Structure formats: structure tokens, C-alpha cells
Length: 522
Image 1 (cartoon, rainbow, N blue to C red):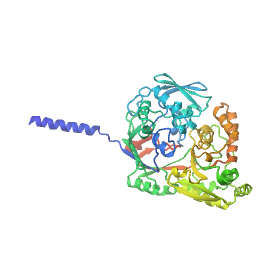
Image 2: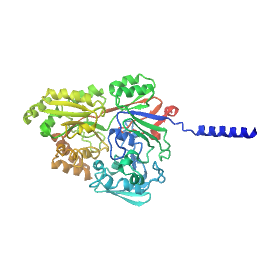
Image 3: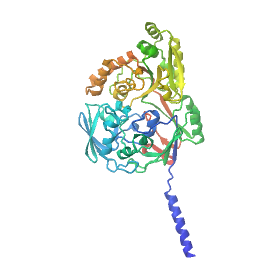
Image 4: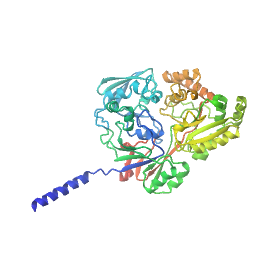
């Protein structure tokens, strides 16, 4: 009998210990408008990808977005590197933290940094992933000094080098896993150092990450984060209200009063360092820059912002942000001048030829509503624009289907022209190098690309400002595209969750920015 009692006591004690040690952290569910096709950190860097990869990877240096109330600070803080020193105008030496663990348990060393930033992967003449090149314009190579020290060398002086190292395309990946799996397999099950790691991916439905408890920035506060694809706004809102989802993204402004009516829901808003733009392909009737300029001049951006966004956002004056160190405060606004548009169309001999505007549904918030409003504005000056909403980007880029206009967004990844204007429209951009459809590439004037080189390599603020102004003038005259506005990104969150959005599409779920329940109210 005593033996049986002892056994039962041992069992209950063991059960109690297991219960006490059970992971009682919440499972966070985020309803998103779409999921990416890859989680290779430099292969897909669009809006739907970076909100996930930001929790999976770390750069050497981090941008501390939350250092100001707007969530847009440019302050730099240590990431995987604990410190860094500018050796000269082309070289930064970084000391890595010791003991930083990848998701597979490997320790981060200089070898991983060399692999992550090597030319063959992202920025050489024929890299594995060419889309990263435009964001790594000045990067030359990495010199491993010892296990925990690296020197990163620029091809030329780069006044934004440290900011560049903190930006897109600079996340550190696990070299061993990458080489063992190959790029495509790694893209489905990547290994980084971030607070959350891959658990399960069901195409078209969800991507679930689980906590990486060895995260050098502290133990994650959620047990898991599931990004669930819910394309319809109404379904995202209904799921939040019912408790199925904890956070929803891309809430239209007209739904904010509805959500504010619930005591257990909090609305979080931020105007993004991202601008909704239109791309004008220089083919058909748009081969004439006067027709492209007329499309831009016909758009009443003030009316669009008031009607769609409650005028809670803004249109920048030129391809820039007020936070830029090179900000041109006196640069003219994008003009609304229907009469000038009509005159340009007459000069160009435009005679009502059809212009096809093709856009994916449920990608850019209010994109369809904006397109419908602009279609009326264009019609008023004599432009015959046909709207073709499609399901995905593959249909937008179909080489066998006509398209003259498409929506786009330009994220200002660094507070400088090097963070958006140069990579998005410069000589290394997809706009000038449409490899799949070369005829749709913009043949930029030689002077425009010369000015891009000045912006990239000059260390003189005045020289860079002059080059920037002239390049903006050429861009407006050539009109390979135009800007509409910076969107107001609205999230809705269960009220017992403390979380702040930032000014890029990143969703920061690091421990210091995600708290639950009683901890959230402290």
C-alpha cells in the first residue's frame, strides 16, 4: 500500500511540475490581406512579406522606429552587431554579439555575415536574387577579421552606409542551412535569428511562426504568431470582433467608427513612409511623355485624400519625405491642372486610344476605389482609360495582355533618396530594366542616370541636393509614373494587447513591443 501511495504521489508531483512549466503564453493570430510566395529575406520585400520576415530575421544594425511617437525614428541601435566603427568613408567595422543563436541552434559568426552579404547572393553582376541589387548599390564585400568581427566595404563613399546596413536586404541568414537546402527550400523554411521561427505554411491559408526562445533580444511574449490570409475587409473585422483574430491589418478609414464602438478593440494608425504611385509604361499611347504627364495632371489628389482617407494622410511634394536629410521643402507640389492636361493631349495628337489600367485586388488598400475615381477624372480631360481589376500580380504582368498603367507603392526604406527614389527608378531598378518585358522599360535620359550616380557617391550635401532637384525635375517631365499619397495604415487590435505599429510595413513583435493582459496595462 505504501508503495502504491508513493507511486501515485510521484505521478501527481510530476504532473504538477509539467503543468507549472507549461507554456501559457498566448497564440497570436494576425489576419492579413495576403501572404508572400517566399520568405527568403531578400527575394520578396513587398508589403505582405516584410510584415512576416521582420520577426524572423535581424540585421547587424537596427533602426529604432519606436524612439518617437510617429513610429518613424531614424535612430540606429545595435542588432546582431553590438557595436560598429566607421573606419573610413568606405569601411565600417562591426563587432558581433557572442552567443547569438540562429533558429537551428547554430551560433552567428562572421562566416554567416560574409555569406549573407556576398555578391553572388544579392548584388553582384549575376546574383542569385537580382531584386536585392537596387538596395545594395554601394556594397562591395565583407572582410571577416575574426569569428566575431567583420569589415563591410563599400564600392565608393556612401553617406548612408550605416542606415543601409539597417535596412531592407541586409538581414543575416544561416549560411550552413542555406547551402544545405538551396535557395528554394530555404525560402519555404528559412533560418534566421529573429524572435519567431517557421512552424507551418499552408499556401493561400496561413503561415505560422513559433517562439525562438533563445532570441538574443529576450524571450518572445507570444508562443506563436499565425498570419492568416483573409482578403476581405469585412471578414477580417468580423473575425476580430468574434475573437478569432487578435490583430487585423489594412482597415479602411470608413470602418474605424465601427471598430471604435467595441470596448475590447483598439484602433492603431500610422501614416506610412510609403507612397502609393502609378507606373506608366511607355508603350502605345503612353509612348509619348505628354500623354503620361496629362494622366498625372488630371488627378485631383486633394479630393482623393478627402474622399478615401478622411484627409488624415498627405501627398509629398515630389518623390521625397519631410524626414529626408536632403528634403527640398520648396519643391513644388504635384499639380492638378485639367486644362494643361487637355493641351498636352492635343499637342501629342492623342485621339481617344484605349489605355488599360490593370490592378490586383486586395493588395493596396482602396486601390480600386482610387482607380474608379481617377477614371472619371481622366475621362473629363478626354483620356479613355479602361480599368481591369485582376486577382494577382501574375495577371498584371502577363506579357500577352495589354497594360499601360499599374499601381505600385514606393517604400522610403532609408530617409534619403537612396532609400526609394534611386533604387525604385534608377538605372538598377526594374522600371528601367524590365527583364521579362523589355519594351515596357523606361528609357531614362542619360542625364537622369548621371544624377543618380551623384546621389549615390557624393559626400557633399549641397552637391547631392542640387543633383536631387534636377533628377526630380527630369522625373516629373518624363513621367514614367506619378505619386498619389502616403496611405494611412490602420490596424485594429484586441484591447488587452499592447502593440505599436511603425511607419514601414514591418510588424514589430519583439518582446519590448508586444505585451498581453495585465502586462499590457502596466
